[in-house]
Image 1 (cartoon, rainbow, N blue to C red):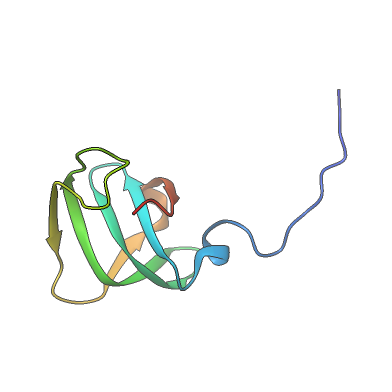
Image 2: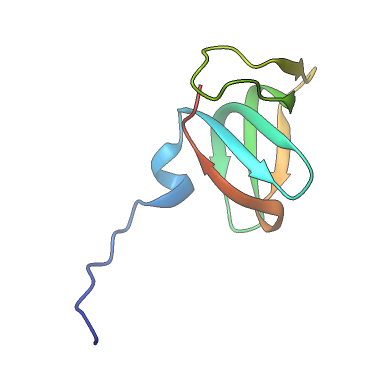
Length: 85
């Protein structure tokens, strides 16, 4: 069965610019404020790497290590993303 699908212009990462996002990538989990997006990478500020999540319903990460500067993440390594904590 084929269905008519609406195309949305501002979906995915673009829709989340300005939000604090969590990125599940092939090796690490990154979290930070999404401030830039292009086809090759995204840019996070006030960000870090999550080494242990703990309960996902908790407000805090169990092991979060802040990065010293803004950080670029390759879009090729992103498996899933969204607003989590």
